[in-house]
Every structure is written in C-alpha cells, then in structure tokens.
Amino acid sequence: MDIIITGLLLGGTYALIAMGLNLQYGMARIMNLANGEMLVAGGFAAFWFYTAGAVSPVLTVFLVAPVAFAANWLIYMIFLRPLVKRAKSRGQLEVDAILTTFGLSFVGVGLMLAFFGGDYFSYSYLSVPVHLLGDTYGANRLVAFGAAVVICGALWLWLAYSRMGVSIRAIAVAPDSARLVGIDVRALAALAFALGGAVTATGGALISTFLTLDASTGVIFTLKALVIVIMGGVGDVRGTVVAALLLGLLETFVASVIDPGLTLAAAYLLFVIILLVRPQGLFGRKTT
Amino acid sequence: MRLSPKDWQGLTLAAIALIVVACLPLVASGYQLSLGVTVAMYTVLATSWAIFSGPTHYISLATAAFFGVGAYVTGIGITYLPYWALPLIAGVIAAVMAALVGLATLRLSGVYFVIFTLGLAEFLRQVITWGQNISGTKGIYVLTSITEAHIFWQLLGLAALVWLAGWAIGRSRLGFALRIIGDDEVVAKHAGIDTARAKILLFMLPGGVAAMTGAILAPRYVYIEPLIAFTPMLSFQVVIMALLGGTGRLWGPIVGVIPFTFLWEAISRSFPNQTTLLLGIAFLAIVYLLPKGFVGLIESARRRTEGWS
Image 1: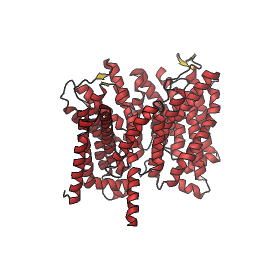
Image 2: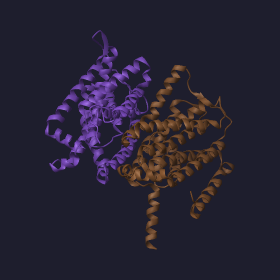
Image 3: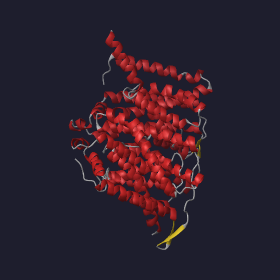
Image 4: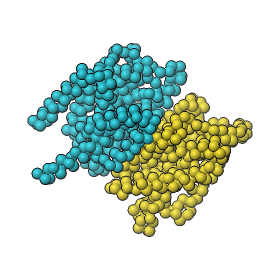
C-alpha cells in the first residue's frame, strides 16, 4: 500500500514532465534531448528562491513557467527554426534535432555547472508527515502531486476543447493538411515547443521539493520522460498519464524492494517491454 | 574480391603511414605519447562509430557503454586470464550486447535506437554499482606491466583492423545495402533488403570495437570504478569528432580526431571548469557550420578546382 501510494505520487509528477516533452516531440515534432536540463533549471530556480528569499516553490512556479516559456520560444526560434526550414524530410529533421538538442543539453549542463557548481542540492520544504490510509507521507510529495494534477488537467482541457488546443492537435496529426484549413503551423509549433518547456520547468520546480538534483542529472529525467512518452504513445495525453503512473509505481517498487540506485534500470525494463510488445504505445493503433 | 591497381596503391600508402606512426613511441616524450594514445583511441572509436552511423544516419550514443564493458572485462578478467585474450572476449561480449540492443530497437524507427543508446551507459553504471553494493566490493585495481607504448601499438593495430573492416564492408553487398538504407529506407525495403538485419549486423562492429578499446585502455586507468568506466562524456566526444571530420568517407573521422584532441587539450588546460559548456558550444558550431565536416569542405574545394581546370 505504501509503495502504491508513493509510486502514484511520483508518477503524477512524472506525468507533468512527460507532458512537457510530449508537447515538444508529439506536437512540435522536435525530439528534445535537452528536456531534462530545462527540468533541472526549474529545480534550481525553486531552490534558489527558497534558500535566498524563502519563497515557496509553489509560488516560484508562477515565475518559472513564463520565463521557461520565453526561453524555450527563443531556443526554438534561434536553433530549431532553421533546422525545420532546411529539413527535406521528417527523418532528416529528427537527426538534426537530436544532434542540436544533444549539444544544447551539454551547454545547459555547462551553464548550470558554471553558475551553481557540481554539488547536489536539496532543501526541505514542507517535509512534514501527513497521515494517509494508515501510512505517513511527506507533505511536499502530496503538494507536488496536487499541483501536477491541476496542471495536467488544465492542459488536457485546453488541448481537448479550446480552439488553439484543437489546432495544436491538428498539426500533430497532419501538419500538411493543417495548413490547408488556415492553421499557422510554424507559429503554433513554436508555441507548443515553448509551452512544453514551461511545463517541464514547472515539473522540475515541483520535483525539487522532494528529490535531490544536481547539474548533470537532467539526462536521466530526459530518458524517463522519453520512455513515458513512447510508452503512452506520441501525442497521446491519456497514454502519457497512464504510462507515467506505471513508471512511478514500478520505480518505487524497485527502489524499495531491490535497491534505490536502480531507478533507471526500472525505466529501461519498461522500455524494452514496450519496444518488444507494443511499440506503437499503450493506446496506439498499429500503423502500416 | 578483385583489387584494382588504385586499390593496391591506397593500401600500400596506408600501410606505410601506419608503420611511420608506429615509430612514435620510439621518439616521443611521455606527454606526446599519451596524446598519441588519446588520438589513437578516438580514431578507433570515431571511425567505427562512423562506419555504422555514417551510412545509416542512426546516431549511436552508446560508445561509453561498450567502452565501459570492455574496461570491466579487463578489470575482472586480468587475474584469471592472459591479457591478450581479454580484448577479444570484450569484443565478443559487446558485439552480442549490440546485437541484442539492435534486435530490440533497430527493427523500429531510428528514434527508439537513439533514446535507448542515450541511457545505456547510465543504465549499465547503475547495474554495476548495484552489483558492487551486493558483493561489497568497490573499484577494481588493474595492475599490469603494460606501458603506454604497448597500448599505443595495440590501438594502432585495432585502428588498422577497423579501417580494413570498413573498407571491406564498403565494397560488400552489406555496404551497398546500407547506402541504400541511408538514402531511403522504404526503397531499400522494396528492393528486397532485410533492413533490420543489415543494421543489426553493422551495429555489432562499433559495439565490439568500443569494448576492445576499453579493454586495451583499462591498464592505463589503473583503478576502475563505474563512474570512470561509463563516463557519458566519451559518447559525446566520439560523436563530435566523427561529425567534425565527416562521416561520408572512411578517413573522415581521423581528420576530426586530430585537431579536436589538441583543441580539447588546450581547453581542458585553460578552462578546466567550463569543459562541458565549451564542448556543447563546439558541438553546436559543428552541426550548424560544418554539417558535412571537414570531408565536405575538402571535397567541395576539390570540386571547385576541378571545375576551373
């Protein structure tokens, strides 16, 4: 029971991070290997505001999100727009995007090392015990989970019902046809990329309340988010949430039963199973 | 396989160049030799990387994983087996691993492969750390009488093998199939090429070679622990150097390895704290300014001069 609830709480935060990546990969079609660095940057911001000014991470989020939005929009415009323009095919864009964001991720790690050093950082925010169904949990995990649920829910509603959300889903499904019905694909792709970055940075700020981060942990989160997105199906919100909860559960199980150092191994296990059994994702339909 | 006079000429020139380079340990100082070992190591890694990733456009980020496996094979095996057998064992183990990774990912689209290789080194590091926690050991000492000169010669021999293999593959049916896959995978499938099989077979080469390199270099580290053996920076540097040189030609990567090794020496001496940042910036510069590497520059220059004459 303890494992299930802790796992679900962790999975909720993962869902938020993976949603960010899904917006970038599924909607804007940019395979962003620098996603984890954005997450760590969000975590750093929360850490810095909390230790320097005692600002609650839940409030920092309102600053982190717009800043990350602007930063990611700029990244898209400066680095990725030229690639989208010169790419002749989807495959070529993928290769170029992978190389570029791979380089960007090292730049990100380097910048954070320069500003914050290589130490682990953590702070204790709301680490008071909360009793739930006979066990105790950290209040920070509950708060992070609650925030993740609210943000994921809002995103889902926005994507499902707003005009802009529908347009974004349209460019994910059929970028060529979307242009025919008067959707500005380029502007919307930039928007989806920026929004994805903002969501990921928010997730980072929330996750830093209960996990210890350091400048070079970004790649692990990138990987977990990628596994979740692939498992849930690219561009599929519902699948992402389910996959994130599954990963959270499995990871917590592995960490508490076998060894806490094996969390990435858990993600790999899921990844291999998915690749072998359902490469199209949990709810995906087989394509020809 | 029939060789034309031009082929013989190329082979002879390459052999002479190798023999000249092999004399380096006889004349160089200790520092120069250690640079030479670094160049040889990256030449082997980047060339074998490019043999797979060049024609297929599948970016492998798994070099560090295989390299670490090789280093561990030497670290564990050195007390039980003769040294010469270890690189071979490492190569076989890693080739099998590469085949498994390929079986899981290369049948699908390229993204899965990239993602899988991205985390492979980190994954193996976690598993080995866990194994050490259980067995209660820490790192491994590799104490041998092997000198830098021995390592250099071994790497040079391995480089020669890699070039020969790359050259032979380029002339074979497999190489031809891979070029078609790289141009258009759908066409390749319709032409009756078993694309997955070709890619998996080829991926075993950089995997095995990286592990052999790791096995050869293990005595240089003296002390092996997961964090040293599976450093993610290695995969990154190999990709940079291969791209800087250009992956379109067999001799491309070495054109990138030599200048980059010296640049890297200078950077890590002058800015030891900003290496990651500068590496990232160098990488971006190459991707944007030199998409085809030095090879592309040289060949377009050659084409221009030919146009004039």
